[in-house]
Image (tube, rainbow, N blue to C red):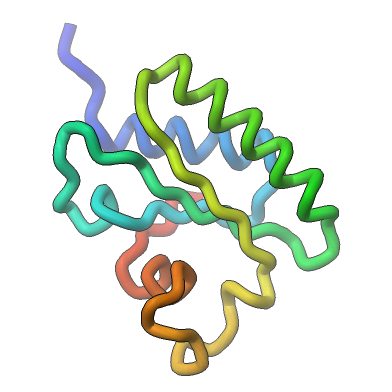
Length: 111
């Protein structure tokens, strides 16, 4: 049986993270989004959450989902949450070294 593509795995992870967290958007960033990942590269996800949800509750759900997915898939995942207004701040106002800037300029929106 052929192995699943990296894109299919990224989509599956993004869907699980979105379902667990209720995120409005899920972005892939880092080496997998840029196309320069090596076999042991982790998957980096940015989850854009509503401005009015309890961020600590969402973070707890995300941590639980990441742990479960890492165990199921034998992959490493970093997932960061950010409020909608902060993520969609004008790009020219973001610091070029920020995760938000990297995600918006080099990332791929999956959901």
